[in-house]
Image (cartoon, rainbow, N blue to C red; front, side):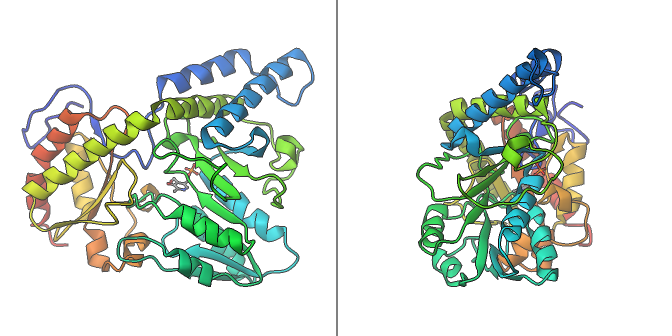
Length: 394
Ligand SMILES: Cc1ncc(COP(=O)(O)O)c(C=O)c1O
């Protein structure tokens, strides 16, 4: 589809404008090449002791080292999974299972469903779950997290960079306060990897989740970093793989693609932060200049470089997403898994926004392949689409 849809506004013809990088990212060429090479030449079972198996094992172990280097972790702390949902489930259920009887778990009121759902399941099984509120900017207070800790707290689990708003929590301060109390801390860093520096050598975090498809890698691959010595029972039983932390034959091509995406992230990080930040700011400046009655959701100061969440008073986010799509622009109302659902975003509601306000929100997330011309095209068509969406009863 070419840019320049029903509104008649023309831009560079050719590709669509993809502003939904927090839902998933286009797979980078380097990741595709690494996966192809693994499929062709490393198809053996990494647990086999023959040459075919050893070729696959080499891919897996090189990938482990690459990912550990990006995060400042040790290679033997990286446990490959099928993505961040599995990593989050493993961290939460695994740490809960590692203690003798149900106690308490601490989280925030603005988590991803892959954290909320396992916590709710544990709550139903007798655990107490404390959900620390976020403020109007979506930020957590480190002291409030510390105050929620109890002698029987088995785990604190927090989203570092919010997928809907881009709000980045003050993790260093929180981690310090949690460590003082000797409680393990899990962070979902899925939206942070490749968008901000991560140095686990300096950050007292015990478990960290990430997903390949959010950073230019394939879907169905990710990892959980488990710091040495931490008790975390495996979620998947049935094999000794991943040092008995995750049963099942490793997804060798997926792991190769994840490692290639991590290598790119390490190389490109400073440029991404400045470039994506400029594009996001250009978008927000333009929206503010051209569209009345808009507000930005979430802290602008503590934000992922690529994410903009805008509330457009009187317009339905769902209507806007559909109208933008017809113009060749991909955007979202919030979490991809919540799109199309009638429920307003629980993240925005946790920040004190009304259900109506939350339904009027649009998430625009930039990334690889987005340029100034693409942003200007969005700014050229959006005011008209908003004016029309405001006429639709909400
Ligand atoms: C913050 C966050 N955590 C977890 C996930 C789940 O990741 P995956 O699709 O790899 O299971 C996502 C993606 O939707 C996410 O944005």
